[in-house]
Length: 300
Ligand SMILES: [Zn+2]
Image: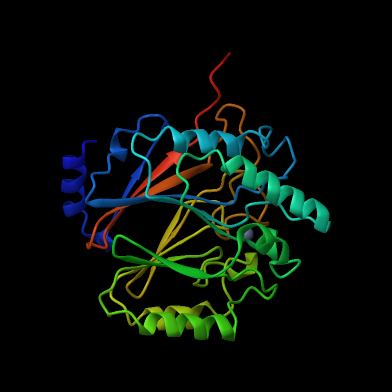
C-alpha cells in the first residue's frame, strides 16, 4: 500500500480512529512507508527469553532473533521500538533471571534503531519486585514525548498483587495534570488495564483508577501485551490494543478450560506469533496498526 493510499484508508476508517491492517505473510513492507510528517513505532511483546518446550516452540532460541531481523529489514525504520513486558521467562533463580535479562539485552542490542523502550512483565519482575529488571533496564514506569504524542509507561507487574499501587497512581495523576485535555496520549503497559478476563490474571487490580484519570483526556490509546494475542477493546472512549507474543499464542479469553499455550503447528510454523507497527499522522491521534507475522524459515 502506498503512503497516499494509506492516508485515504486512514480517512475512511472512522471506527475508533484505528485501522487494522493484518498481514498474512511477513515480508512485504511497502506499507511501512513513513513520511517525515508521520510518526511510527514498533511494538514487540512477551518474548519470554529462556522459555524451553519444543512442543510449544521448537525455535525458542531463534524467534526473538528472527523478530529483530524483521524489524531491521523494515523499509523505514521506526522512531522507536517498545517491548511491552515479559522479556524473559520466569525463574526462581535470581542468577538465572539476570542471565536471561542480559542475554535478552544482548540480542535486542542488534536492533538498528537505538531508541528502544523497555517495560517489565510479571515474568521479569513479580518475584523480586523488579529488582533484577531495574539493574538492566532502569525505571519500570516513566514518560516520554515523541512528535507531540505523550507516552506513559505504567508498571502493573512489579507488585505481585497485579496492581499499579497508590504511589504510581499519584505519580500518574501529577503527570496528567500538566497536559491539555486534547493532548494525544499513548499508554504502554503489560497487563490490560481493564477487566478482560480476571480469572486468567488478564486484568489490573486498580486499573479502573488509572482509566478514570485518563478518561478526562480526549485521545487515549493503550498498547499492552501479556495475553499473547491480538485483541482490541474500548472502554468509554479509550482504545486498548493487545499485541501478539514472540514465543507462543494463548487461547482467546475464556475459550479454553485453562490458560495454556497453544502448541506449535508444524504445518503453520510461528502461527499466532508476531509484532506490530503503529503509525499516526503527527497531531492526529488516529493510529494505523500493521500486524506483522513471523514467516516460516526458508528451506536451506
Ligand atoms: Zn505477562
